[in-house]
Amino acid sequence: MKVNNKDYQTVWMEGNEVKLIEQTKLPYKFEIYSSKSHNETASAIKTMIVRGAGAIGATGAYGLAQAALEANNENFKEYIEKAAETLRSTRPTAQNLFTGINYVYDAIKNISDLKQMQETAVSKAKEFADYDADACKKIGEHGNSLIKDNYKIETHCNAGWLAFVDWGSALSPIYYAHRSGKKVFVYVDETRPRNQGSFLTAWELGQENVPHAIIADNAAGFYMKNKEIDMMIVGADRIAANGDVANKIGTYEKAVLAKENNVPFYVAAPTTTFDLNTEDGNKIPIEERDQDEVLFINGIDENKNVVKVRIASEKSDAKNPAFDVTPAKYIAGIITEKGIVKANKEEIKKLIG
Ligand code: MRU
Figure (cartoon, protein in one colour):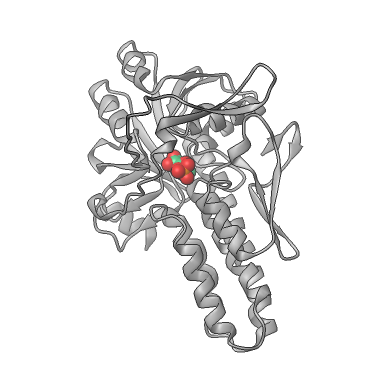
């Protein structure tokens, strides 16, 4: 991934600090956030300084490695257990968060030598992040095979390299196609209420020089009906055993519209997003976020100051579910690092093994 033509990683560790791209300040300011403790890392996940399923998975893994470095010889097992719980409780929906934390936790839970436990934690966290980066690169290669020259592709939310280590999930095939010389155009859903589409995806596509336009969330049907969209690719926060997909609120209605208008609707996600213990989408926990995300919006004024303004009546409350579930029947295929599979129980079981 490139920011201002310089190579960056989505998340990394330097000594005992976890380094993150400060996503709440984008697109107005590009800053690196340094978290000095596992508690600060947990809070960065909760407040969405870092967000996106894969990014919080890798951050959770590094957060537990941080806790390992903070631990001392007395009761370090309890310290690690408590830290893992703190990190797990930050956000409920994205499976990658749990996959990442558990990857490190399972590797260290039976080690009784402190130094060995610390070294293992740090190397396992990096291994996890590197796995996801490599998986996302392969998603790009597989997904590229679906993209024809001059394709117009719609995406929802942000499933680019801010959200999934170094390549992104849904945007990875688009980057791959663009870098290999195909002409592509991306319709970016703005993705209310937090505007991950207009604030993050559009900014990423700009950094990569991919032609795109932001559309209001409720314009998707208009463009699909007018045959302006050749395919839709979205990311996933959790995929249940039967192929139902939890993703950013608004994904479900786009999938229904895509079916109605014969637009192939693809989901891109590495195998770290699958949750075979959750039978179907109805059992995926859906995060309800603060109503202020709907009632207020951030923007930039004429003096380039970031300002937060209220956009609703003072007398109104709001509801704010962060995700919805798209039933498997609307999904043309799931693009993974191991290939493109149908969204059904049999294929998913074969894929995960
Ligand atoms: O609430 P967020 O911004 O962390 O939501 C996660 C997402 O960005 C999306 O749902 C995305 O499409 C899947 S994560 C690559």
